[in-house]
Length: 249
Image (tube, rainbow, N blue to C red; front, top):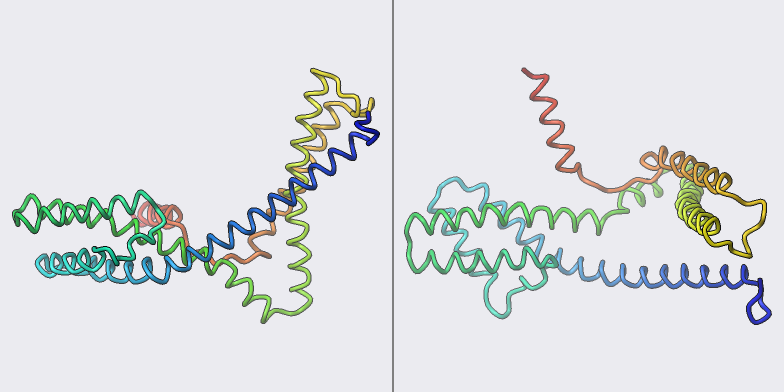
């Protein structure tokens, strides 16, 4: 089938290529902006705030803890506060609620308001902790890979780079197989002229299965070859604690 004298398959390939190129370029620019903003938040808010909150969290004496919380809220209040650099709207709103609770406590220093302030603080600490480590892991995501490439045998570095190419190829093939399956099913409902007569649902499903196998094979070696600078997840930590507690009995 031709449109304006051009084969439809050529038009489709051109459109898909243009779309992929646009998405890649668009996402690359967005990621660059994201990392720049995240780096600023990490340096100016997450890191100093996490260190300060950690000291407060480690303080057991109640009056001293309340004094430190008071200093903390005062430091991150006012028009020049860098609290605005917190990316999460939920955490930012939570901090403003904490500030309101703190103001209420300062106006009326009773046990109810004191308990509410401490509870609010206890809720903020794990949020900032997660933001801090997530930002750290994102900014320094490729740290281990660069270190590995620097000190590894050049032969293994080449193998690693080749593997990464094939890994991304497997992801691409997997998504293409799903697109092919979609058009094959569409062809069964409404015949499409440019689909070959010999092509059918069996071939489409076989293509998907082979793509999944290819992708799965690449995933098997991903953790070995592609090194990510990631901390142990909280789920993993809790699972280990549960197993240790279970077998420790």
